[in-house]
Length: 127
Image (tube, rainbow, N blue to C red; front, side, top):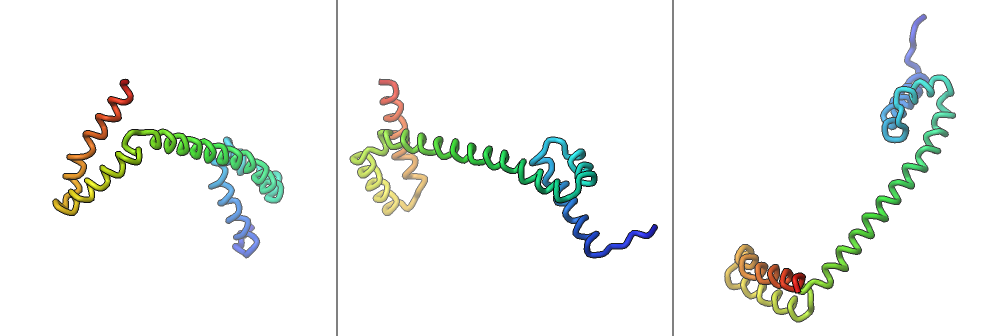
């Protein structure tokens, strides 16, 4: 029996290869998944993949909502920090701009302005 690489055979091999690559991410049993493709047929297997993708999509949506809530909580916590109060932020940003203009050194700005802000945040947290 001679094996011919015709268009339908190539398409089937490509689909099986893609399913084999996607199987570990969608189904825990990858080897059985490819064997099932041979027994059930590609149509049923693609339908099974679509069904399993619903769960993966739900998990991805949950992780995105969890990341969004974490980012929102972080922004809310930073908004209450002493460094971001309007008077402090304005004076420090003007001072930093002046030091950058005069000294042209971003390292100098960090050395002069960030330690007082850090210690003021720690002092507020301890009080």
